[in-house]
Length: 416
Image (cartoon, rainbow, N blue to C red; front, top):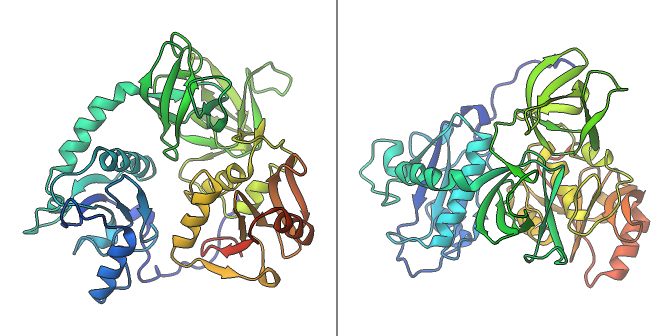
């Protein structure tokens, strides 16, 4: 990695540095439990206070839907005296919260703890000295109880990829895939299947596990690195001629036990160790500077509806994997990705003549990204692969096949 010799700059006022996040704060809206508010209502309320906008980073409605508020890099307005070192989530309601809300809260907090392992989970009333009772329950104690209850139900994916289907049948449509090293939460079991929640993005569906998880799921570990190549074979020795043990795809999570030279040693679920080239892994806290270059590594990968691995992936999986590698957590499917992108602070809509590298183009049921004003990259059924093609061809063809023309969005943290 090339050293950065640029002069150090003072932090931009209003930005929230990820290393400074010490508190993950749970709030409630303190509104009647039967009042069905949404993030837009909180936004209007906080604008009415004279603030810059919604003060929370997420809002969880009575139906459990978790809506984005401020982006995580923007300092919130939710805990006076601690906004420069905290993230905040607000549950709609006052005293009685729904099971769906608490499930969504648990998913969000698990994701936050994974990305901010040094941060403490607290309620507003326990974050700072205050007369407020928000969120009207002991959030830290609830989280501890939840962890104790769920820990036995959480397992690590041990297969290179794990199909997550719409129903408990191998013939059911493929909705997504869990990758090696990711964590799943088992929600219910049958003799040969389990309904799981993928902790990476909250996606739920059914997996096939047989009588016991076996080679599919295993005990949780603490991953340290992620695979950044399109795919790689884990070898049995630091020698390209040594036998391969397992093939891993981009986004897989691994636990490195030793680093040195051109090879890193990782621990496999069965206790063996394997070797991977140092250049194909990055520490979890390291972020790729250009998500488009990440997607470009997957050019030629077969198209597979619901796929999320190097064996095959779909349009939204390509975008999600690329964004994740750059530290941008987005939804799994193209429809929610559009809603998420529109809700992000700083997102702007651009015309096709203004498009540049990193701009995302959305159609109903499809998404892709610009490599440049003239080139477009997407996983698509027309080519049955991840393809880079002339932007004019891609947009005109997809516009003609779609009920609506492309919406082109520019995120505020995309490559220049």
